[in-house]
Every structure is written in C-alpha cells, then in structure tokens.
Image (cartoon, rainbow, N blue to C red):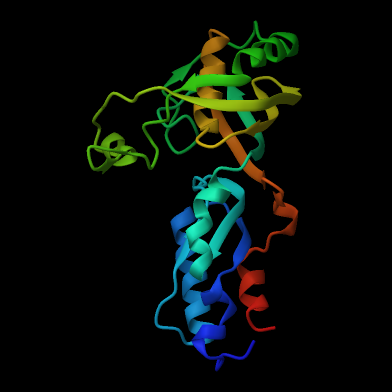
Length: 235
C-alpha cells in the first residue's frame, strides 16, 4: 500500500474489520496497541482509532475482532454476536482466578467422576444461566478493575448476572482433564463456567486452556497473526 495516500482515502481511517489470532501471553489491549502502532508507522499517521470487540484473557488464544477508524462505531454490534470457544477444564482443583493465572488453592479427589456424570452435569449450564464474573477480571466496580482489587488481596461482592449458553459439549475425557466446546452469548465467562461446573460436581475445577474459534460468522481460520498482519500492510 502507498504510504503517501491522502488520509481521507486511507482504508484504515475509513474503517476496517481485522481478524487477528491473538497469541498466548498477550493482553487484548497489547494487541490493539501493536496493531495501532503498525498502521501509524506504515501510513505515517499521527493518530487513528483502533479497538477490539471483546476481550480475551492473556492465557487464551484465538479470534480477536479489531476495528479501525470509523468502524470502531460498530464495536458493540460485533461484541453482541454469538461466540464459540474450545479448551480444557481441569477438575479436582480450584484457583482464585478460575484459570492458571493463580496457584491452586484447593484440591479434591476425582475418583468418583465419570464421563457420564460430567456429560449429565453440563445440562445445568445450558440455556439462560446465572453466573458471577471472576474477581480476576477487567470489569469495574467503584472505579476499580476487579483484578486490581484481587491483586491487592482484597475482596468485594460481585453480583450474579444472566448469560446464555447454547451449547456445552465435552470430549476427550482424560479425567481430571476434559476438553469442551462452548457456544455462548455476550458476557459469558468461560472461567466462571469451568469453576461452577466443578462445584456442581461437588468437586473443583478451573480453566486450563482456552481458544476462541468464532464470533458470529467470523472464524479464526481466516485470522492473521501479528507477523502476518504486519506483512500484509506492505503488500
């Protein structure tokens, strides 16, 4: 692309939807910052609006929809779309963050757990369900991020909220580990679902792997990693 294009005709300023395969270890905010920097460098822009349509935790990978320029006005539309996740739940242990960000704080025997029991228990987690977001999350309460409260060693009351889970399928049973595929609506925390699933089994559980495969009709198969996106800017 010609970096000397007048700004009014720059496709990224006019608005684009980018499909990025977020790598493990990156925050969604870091990905947005990197994409913004690459675009500004390539087109010699002083500023450009860039935002993502739905956070992925650092320990998750997969599809991140990023909007640029005027398309950022439509972020809420993308956030509202159905999402598909795959990953692994590890039973027999809990963590404060409901994933591997924090150390295991409780352990349970998994000798009584069977694939049949696990599959039966998924029925409690389909349709409209109530769940509490994890305290290790980016949601705000009283002007503070919940994870800031948690990392300061403090606690706070978190209200339950209704979310919708259309599909909760289990496969590849290697108890205490089991793989899953979840199709869900906006605002669903897969970490909370993993934690609550363990509790429903009179056991414990936490999320040990997560990948977002789809958002609406957008598929991670069509997404670029950071290096591929950088190369695409030069073509």
